[in-house]
Image (cartoon, rainbow, N blue to C red; front, side, top):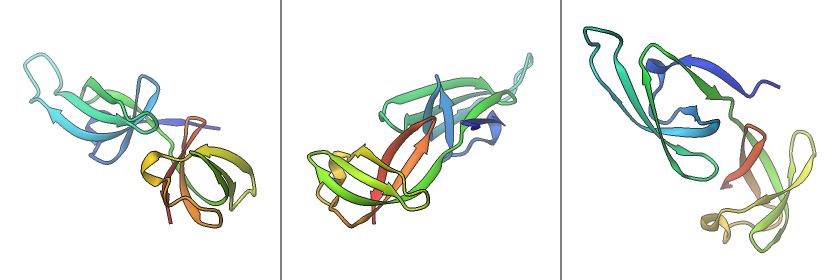
Length: 130
């Protein structure tokens, strides 16, 4: 299974995803300098980690290749909730697994509701509850 693809750094946009230190991150800010006498424009890409929420910075020439993670969004049904963990079932594959429910969504997570799960680099996270 392919977990990442390549893109040119200058094609990155705010709201898109990029891999920084093998961590999938969502781009929140892009600063670029003008091309100089001795090379390409430099870019400073600031992004937030999708799973841990940590801030990451990528410094790269504008024409360099960057890794972009393949992010999948899946719909799941919540089967049961225990503390901050929920047992969910993927609606396409009927696979059942446990996921941690983020603190801001714990009040909304109840059995029988649907949720959207973000999956990248072999990790999963509850993104929102429908």
